[in-house]
Length: 127
Ligand code: DGP
Image 1 (cartoon, rainbow, N blue to C red):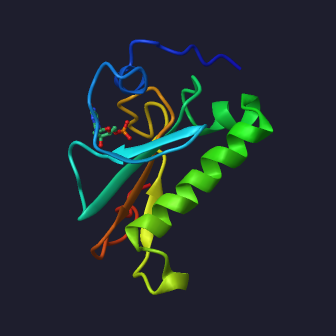
Image 2 (image 1 turned 90 degrees about the vertical axis):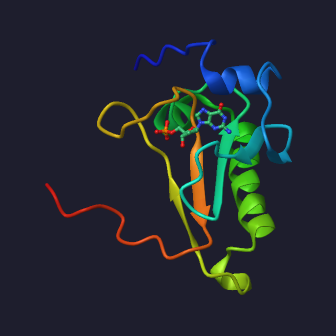
């Protein structure tokens, strides 16, 4: 599996503090910040701090501590945004666009958490 990581991608620059961001949460293994082009009232990106291109790269090569830390950070962000259905929220959508078919613009793993409105069907029914 070949997942070359571009250290000049925009999220790498955010992690290095070279570009500002609207931070929601920072932990040992993750950073969450508001998307610059929000598509819902709540639109937060959660990224691991390590150099992972996409989720399958992360799942195959990250340490257990990174995987747990990243996953817990995603859960914490959902809690902070008040979108958890089990805690009175109205729900949310998690998206990880990956590669060319997934129309991934930034080659550093990021999960979008979107909420605050009805988001419609996941995909238009084209096959
Ligand atoms: P995608 O790779 O297609 O999942 O989308 C990348 C997202 O990243 C897109 O919603 C816009 C967002 N984005 C791109 N550049 C920046 C930036 O410099 N700051 C922030 N906060 N978000 C960005």
